[in-house]
Image (cartoon, rainbow, N blue to C red):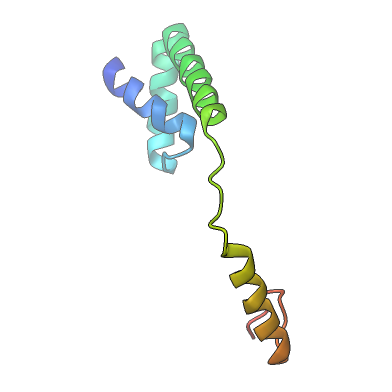
Length: 87
């Protein structure tokens, strides 16, 4: 794996988006590239944290709570429950 490929995989690794086989290859390359790899991973983690902290929560539509409560009332009136037991 070239270092450029390692950089691309590092971004996915930090997000937890590599499968087992990809992670194994990534770890081999991580050892191969040593300190340079660790510095790049550290930078990716830092950027990931900054990005996550920059996100603002999305406000629900005004009628969302009313619709949810109506569904709960319907379920209770039909004798169901609200715990998600469907069996």
